[in-house]
Length: 374
Image (cartoon, rainbow, N blue to C red; front, side):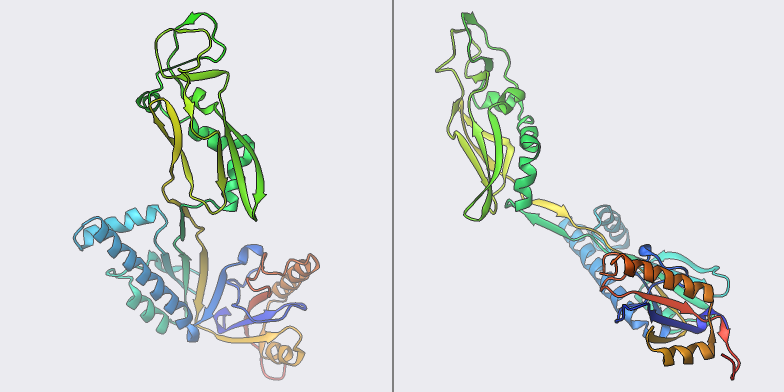
């Protein structure tokens, strides 16, 4: 009897509770988080999830075809898959079937998709009728959720204030000469100009130098960031003709000497100032900003086996199992040592190994003992 005959999930040391068993019979490690083993009798646990994820993919593809006014055919669905995959907008479900005796590949890794050979019907049939000498591996990467917002968050306020407002300054420097000239800004000259001098071409650097980003403050329980707007050493002017002495009426006029960004208020696009007739007004509101969420990868192995779950402190149950089955004592020792090490470091909190704070290990029996031996 080989290792497919028993998958026993054991809670180690003093940390006891319920969770999905880890995906490996080898020495466990912190890298095993997100890896699971399921016995054939419980195949629906994984199949129902696969079916749900495939349905989400089909919905995303349908929406893509509708949005891009494409006919619903195999070619266009393939195109939609390719484009949506680039933005992590699909769940990628891979299935591999292997021989449990020598780990040779029976069915190569294939993506589960509707209207292909390896669809959900194929998956269900394979799991339902899993051969005693085979196991199935799934590696599933879920689509990235996205967050779209037009409002400033607390994190936004801090990020914009960082490095003396570099993110804001960088945006201001993207304002083009054409934007300035269209708004009536035709040149720039020293604010302390003496004598008759001709202004030079206006620049985005000079425009950006009008703005000084302050520090984050809390006002009425909301984070705020103030930006002062004032004439710099070189000023923008509304003429390209010679200017005598210090510019006054020719200078770019400033409507608001202070811009306040407040948590929860509309975002501003600092690359789109309103400049009309040589007067600087407000900035345009920013378009919705979409932030991709994190993808999650989960590995699941389905085996043709009998499963027993016991607590490490249940010595009678332990004795009954080890009296019936033979286990690799080296593997058991390794599991114990790592669990003890994690426990000593107080890392069994869900952050390192098991998602609900419970340490679990899977042991595979090497063979059934003869009755009367222990």
